[in-house]
Image 1 (tube, rainbow, N blue to C red):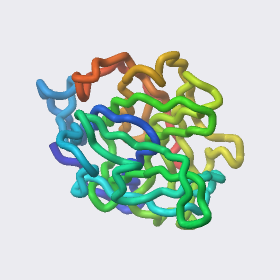
Image 2 (image 1 turned 120 degrees about the horizontal axis):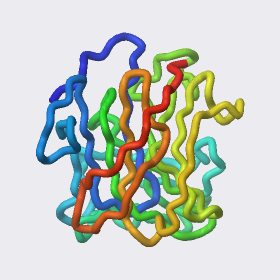
Image 3 (image 1 turned 180 degrees about the vertical axis):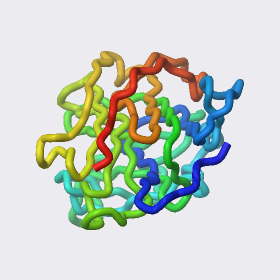
Amino acid sequence: MTFSQLQTGCLRVTLTLMVLALGGCVIHGGTTPAPSSASPEGWSLVWADEFDGAGLPDSTRWDYDVGGQGWGNNELQYYTAGRVENARIEEGLLIIEARREAWLDSMDYTSARLVTRGRADWQYGRLEIRARLPHGRGTWPAIWMLPRDWDLGDGSWPDNGEIDIMEHVGYDPGVIHATVHTKAHNHMDGTQIGRQIEIVDAQSEFHTYALEWMRNISPPTSTTRRTSPTRRGSVIGRSGPTTVPST
């Protein structure tokens, strides 16, 4: 299955992961999805990582954001690269771990921020990520997408868009957020498009978080069901589509 040819002004996105345990990450896509026994009905698998082996994440699939400048959110951690203390694969899971430790004489916390940028990107499709979230006030695990090319509007955020598949704020346990940001709809103006659902055991059990993204429509909500840690890439229920403005 292939994606449609990219046209000028169309958004292709890369995936970002922050502070969580992942049991599987799969992408289904294509402009004319065909049924597949290994995929949700009507979709064909185009990319996946089941986190086999041990050690650092697969460098052919994942890169890192690195730095400790707050990232626009007053974040206290420094994001490292290629450091098993912060990102590692073990027993079929990708572990992204935040640690309280001195770093570079200026930071008191470290973590990892994994991205598919430069490795893989997609325009339209279905994304499924199975994850268990961390406990603790101050944590902010997220699964989200940013554009590959920052060539719209003023060349920065929010003109070029953002799709948050899953965010969980530690001081509000069990509340899962999914949000779309655009030039016209963003949190700075209080006009972002988002939904919340409650998953009381999100920090103790694995759930599958999914997004179906199609031209002009996408359900800005996380839909989940509990899955066994050994059932990777499980198919989940589908929510009704909601129109998403393109500007």
